[in-house]
Image (cartoon, rainbow, N blue to C red; front, side, top):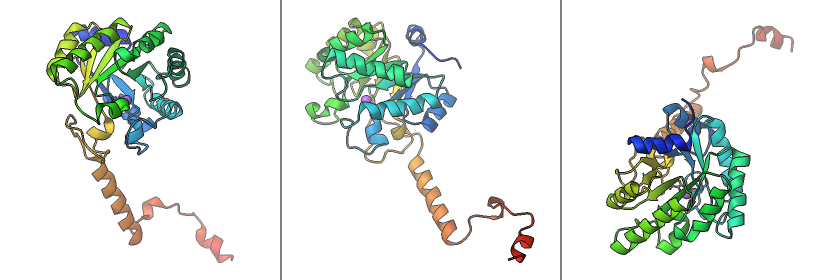
Length: 277
Ligand code: KIV
Ligand code: NA
């Protein structure tokens, strides 16, 4: 299939066609996502937890993100891929935010960048957008500021915080963002924002009534074992499959059942060769 553009994604919203995205961090997963026909791939800074083993996303660096984005692009050359701006790459100034956003395009051929926050990062969104880069906003549960939120907690569950998120969403669209991701907020709030905004509004843990869904590959495949958020649907238990395969291999080696005849290279005249010695 032809690679989607931000115009295609906006058009899908108008038609009520749901967009699908998944996270991926390496070549094989990206290739599987493209073969499965996903509309978008996010190279999330969740890579810190899912593939690097950190407790949160805060330690992830720009260089980590670029390396993983490059691998994903090689695996999914025809998919809309989004680079996730890691903590510290856009907090200091508009200038630094633009410089780092540019790296995602120049070094890893990304189609867009995503950053966390509402009105507090509005000049960043505008600056990156003014640089000609497709920006995607992300509000609700924002893992990079989970310290301020008191942990990985659902957001927008009372009138005051729901209204703050609506104001954030409107400001994000006005600043030039081309899509918005809502994380862990009630579906009623998601529906209101999705109808209010012209740009596509996507959910991760934010319910059904919006323009598409995102899920973390490690969660849905059962590869991330530390914890499973309420909003995750587990489609497979890949950890179990891998562990069982490893155990079978160990058992085979210990009992000399592997390698078998079909796995070895026979020499045509080995007998003759060794006889001479
Ligand atoms: O890093 C990531 O995967 C994300 C999602 C949790 C939205 O930002
Ligand atoms: Na992220």
